[in-house]
Image (cartoon, rainbow, N blue to C red; front, side, top):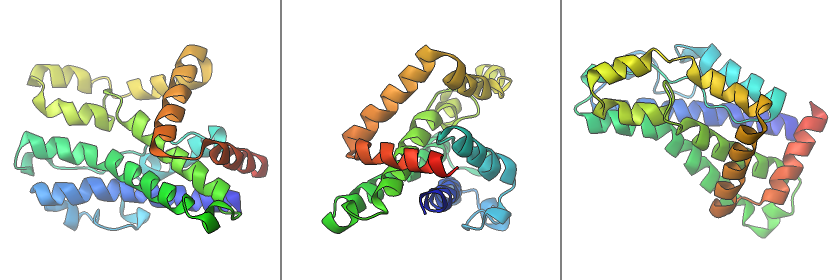
Length: 213
């Protein structure tokens, strides 16, 4: 049950992340997201299902890491201001944070906290926190970079945009460099704990997920 629960929940959160980008872009002036089919939870409508869904699922299965998916294609020229472009970028991580909050609220009820669903729910909440931390790294093309890019000089943007594969290298360091891995997990557990995620339950959920897989 834990395996199916976590995988289905993670796919839903990935869809909500992409939907949040598209919804804020629509409000900000990019009505093309509606024609592209982004204002839906159907993952088959995403322009890049490999980056948006497949790769994050592989990282989840291999290491239990909540890797953020690839962003939907937003036409920044249609957005009304740089602040809207910033809001579009931050909408995805905000969606993950909101999901974590809802899961924490669910786990705060006595019946849910004692149920068999508690460990996978807690682990799913932890995955949302991981996605927020990874997404907010100020590296192209992650959302943290996209949030500040509209305020950078054009020549600097062009330079950073050439480093599109850099995040993959950074993510690789999570496995091979103990210092980077330690920083990431400490940051994840501290933020998750501050949000009220029951870490013991999340650890049990991760253990159950890995045993099944």
